[in-house]
Length: 400
Image 1 (tube, helix red, strand yellow):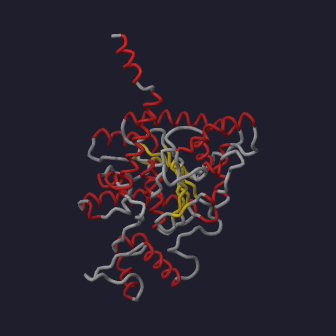
Image 2 (tube, rainbow, N blue to C red; image 1 turned 135 degrees about the vertical axis):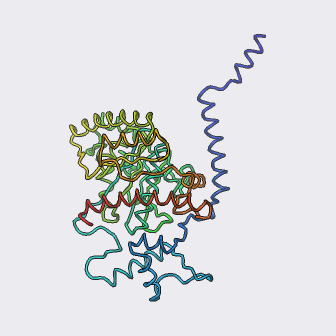
Image 3 (cartoon, helix red, strand yellow; image 1 turned 30 degrees about the vertical axis):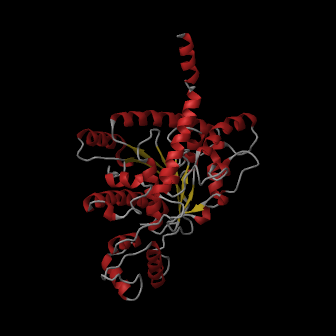
């Protein structure tokens, strides 16, 4: 009997070996799924847009768009007479419109002299708040609206990278995350070496993977040894300063915890967007998050760090308007924070979650994959939220 028990004990794995085995198997299965849903030979792309969508991205009425197209600009009509617009078509129409104008370009929305780079850190302490979904769609929206956008994946889980077509385990090597530009040793790289183009014109990204966790481990040692003149909280801002002239807006998808990475992203930010799911447990978690963040930023300020910002907003995400408790919680937040809660909320939608299953955003997935009402409601919600954020950015620049 004892011999049998000893034999059974011998085959019981340790926690370490079991976790490693599960991690390896899950990674293998995810890679197989990636091969099936998005083979290496395929390329991600933005779908074609309807005239109404194209006009909205350009910033003109659909009737004016038809007039411009009738003058010989834009894409050729399809056999059925309809026209659909690629991102390249939209960009070329912007140039046509601005060439016909006088003075400062209106439709190519790049920063002008005296307008500082906007760095928006999107954050929450709790996972599942829609932080990455918000970051990805905001970055794409701004690029489609004619801004030069950079999306930085600062989350070691790298979901934003996967949405933009970069599998963290396969496509992102050593030194190819932001850690490569903010590390403390001689392997530090210039950030321009790790910025990648995406399939969305006007949008670049810095991918992430587990390597980012190294910053959490090496920073305490650097602080103890004082081996670098640059403090940890200034390193992201210093790296971005090297490529400032190439972009109008930077979107940073922060990790869902308070660490050196998040604090550095906060100190680099000109604006902060906090996503929150309107449930009691999520709001209670956010309360703790805000308290800890305030305490840590006090330490940063005492060490000489800057915590100045242009705006901070709370975004209600995964919102179900017909859910009574959620509506009450959203109202509770508005009663406390007032106008710091964005007027528009990100609705919970099967269109967004289903698109995420194939690592796509709503700007990529074909509308025909959903019922028209489901897709339109989701896209309208995204457009309202992103448009409100765009308005805050333009207001910071002093534009109407």
